[in-house]
Amino acid sequence: MTAKRSELKRQLLEQARQRPSARSVSNIGLAGQASRPASRKVPERFTRFDAHPGYQQIALMRQGAEQLGLKDPFFKVHEGTAGATSVIDGRTCINFASYNYLGYSGDPRVNLASTQAVEQYGTSVSASRVVSGERPIHQQLEQAIAKAYQVDDAVVFVSGHATNVSTLGYLLGPKDLIVHDAYIHNSSLVGAQLSGAKRMSFSHNDLASLDALLERHRHQFERTLVVVEGLYSMDGDIPDLPELIALKNRHQAWLMVDEAHSFGVLGDTGLGLREHFNIDPREVDIWMGTMSKTLSGCGGYIAGSVPLVETLRYFAPGFLYSVGMPAQVAAPSLKVLELMPEEPERVEKLQAVSRYFLEQANARGMDTGPSIGAAVVPVIVGSSPLAAQLSHALFEQGMNVQPILHPAVPEKSARLRFFISCEHTQEQVDQTLDALEDLLSNA
Image (cartoon, rainbow, N blue to C red; front, side, top):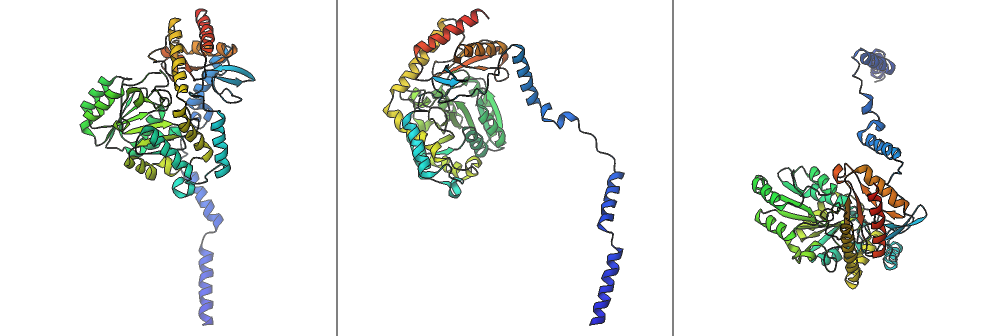
């Protein structure tokens, strides 16, 4: 037995002597690499972030602003609650750059709901809801949204943008068709791209174009979804909901309405586009909205039938794989939904001051495009440099309004975009439009 072991040991040692060392193997590898032809050098512009087209565009914009003697109009720091007024750089300004349409963000009752929620549930639910992040307040908020829309159920997402991305990205696939208004929000475009569905657009609010498109292409696909917004945030106009419903029924399609800006703004009590047209909400297949505007929180929601909502709740990636909404973020929106029916005067004030803004701007000869005068009114000036200059000059006079520049809109459509709150006064509107009229006359 000992002899056998000795012989085995001798054989193993001999094999070890014949085996190349690690260093030898390494050298052989290096030699092999050295003998290979050198890989082609990648152009430097593809290895540097400062050469990325996006950063180059930012640098160009900043250079243009410097040449005009302007400050960057973006990322202004608001030092408190942003409503009809806001404190920026230590100055109180008339503020037309906030989505706080009904003035509930900062309302003491809404603030209290948030602080009570964080005291009860902590600052994070610490997991996706499907795992262990579910809290009673999530269900309460979803039930309140479903009640507001008079539909079966609703589901809330932690991001408004992700709501559209995840919903469209999951519900539709390569055999389906998504048809959207040409002015639809980026979130719907990204969701459509993610889905792999065929994507087509129709001219803004041109339902004859939509009808013709569906007539030509609907039969080629399994599911078809038409996506529009309830209130377009660039132009302040709305779609013809009754005609959209007729079209989607005729062509056997689904209809999705993004109410990010229309909920809380349209209708006698702020219930959105369907209240504005007095339409049965079940005629629309998918209602979408965000909670960062009227509802004074953050995130998004989908409301509709139980099968729709349950499908998203169990399978939509943006819900399934995201942490649940923090309780202190859900609570303000839940409180606003409770307060809105009790305070319809807020909606009345918003609609009245919005109409006043539109009428006064038009009386001064300003181009407000197709805006209906409901919370969003653009003043189109037709030049990005001019829009930036006007925004800067107004800010210097204590009025905060954002310029919308090319490529966000066509150059000829560059504008100032005014977001109006129920807390704005006619005096603030007059002061701002007088200043703008004076600046335009000297431009």
